[in-house]
Image 1 (cartoon, one colour):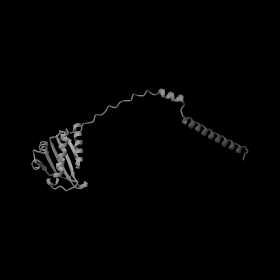
Image 2 (tube, helix red, strand yellow; image 1 turned 30 degrees about the vertical axis):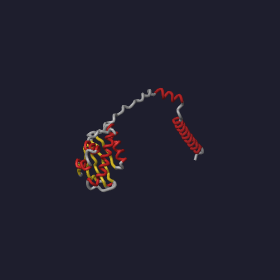
Image 3 (spheres, one colour; image 1 turned 135 degrees about the horizontal axis):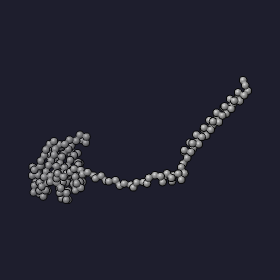
Image 4 (cartoon, rainbow, N blue to C red; image 1 turned 90 degrees about the vertical axis):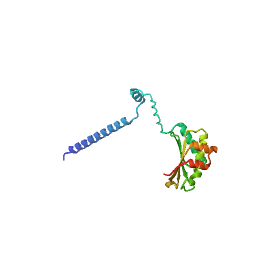
Length: 191
């Protein structure tokens, strides 16, 4: 083996290691240069190159579509009817619609309903609530319908519907009709 050959190998290894070190240093420099925060001058130059911001646009409000059969007046009367039912401890729901009808869905929680006689005390309370809000200015309906339900919450059944004209209720309230006269004028149907 020639003594100059190990020297050559040594030089090649040193040059290779130097080249690798140089590549690593250049790569690290590039990474640092790319990840450094921009200077204030660079930020200002970028901002001036951007187009001016657009004026904020006020969205055009989408009109609320009217719910069929409702108006502010009807909704106020519906709320009043619900409160009148609640004051009489009647469980249920109320709807006052633009077809001039007050509909009360009454759920009998105390007794099973088989016929009108079983429901009459609750029906009378419902008519009383309808007359109260009529007297308070909610004269937007000409008939009252009370749908009677009973049974446990998960098995409630519609037992009967009782309809009355407001004129008949007003005469009954004024004493022109006895209870029996009013009952005779009611329209009672079973589902």
